[in-house]
Image (cartoon, rainbow, N blue to C red; front, side, top):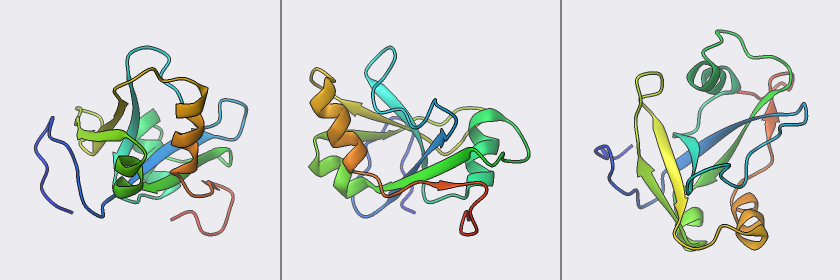
Length: 124
């Protein structure tokens, strides 16, 4: 991984991982408030994503991750910035500068591969 200071934009061939759940809350594809969604820098396992996002030490079967390349997000009009926090030093914010409508949400979802869940064999 390239060293990207807090607040700086990403470029290149890095990946980001988004945490979600299979129990109805799924993966967020639109900010509830503000203009950004959260992800984790790099490709991480379901277990690691769960620890970084929820603070739980062990993932549940319904916890999941999906991965996108930064390049794909950038090519779709998103910006990826390093925004580390105390709980997650690999936190990134994925932003869109325009109106985040249904079309943008669909585009965001298309940037990610298929999700992997905690009860699946290849979750790491």
